Image (tube, rainbow, N blue to C red):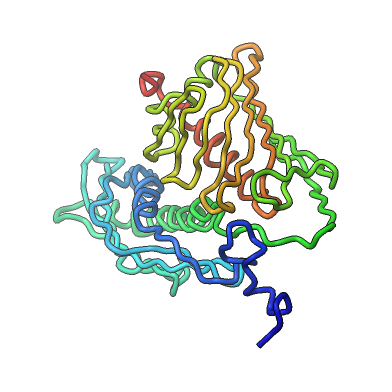
Length: 337
């Protein structure tokens, strides 16, 4: 038996304030089934397929059976999924204007097969219109495979936000995050002196991002503080209590927090965390709204992000907030009522 303090560091837990899963060594599992059903519906329904023969559109996801999960072991993510899917499609022949219907079946989408090797079967109801069936078998299956790749990419990025916990850094270790601008995002270079230690004592960084929105400041502020609008752009149930001390919860609890300051159309400040961060560890997020002609520049500053979760946190704000809001703003204005 090893002496106290001399054991394998992978199993030593007493020095972690949350006392869980040191160095991401232990097996953890998260059920992705409900999330996957919504994501598959999102990426598949409404796909348009056009060609010389005519135009087809994927309709409803009529049947979805299976399950998905994500596991973490030794700092690595392992994915399991198996789906049996059936979609409806309808189309119009270009020359005759005839309308036809059919279905697309995917009997086994799983981690055992590459998307390119996944079986996709196209059928059509009786009658003429085989030109549309051929269109769906060629161009249609290509579009469906692209959508399935989008689902798997989201499973491995959006869903896994925060699953890999920060590991313990040696005392006195200097951490420098060197960041490069991308698109409308402006990122900071973080020096050891600027690292914040908030809540649980772990190395943290500060994130700064900017994004322009085609929306007046008051409208954009409402999108962040109105429950119905948050649920529309995030496509998930949410808890939004936009008042000082009010609670925030999004993405099935993956993100949660508490509002600490609200100035209408100008500023929102909140305590913010990802579910898999160490217990009781919160970052401080400040959202500032600056009117620029008919647009609004949103400035995001986030202090106290665990150093190991920097990239996933950036992805959460850029892809799950900013990009989804851009898409939402492109919809008819009555959708915001």
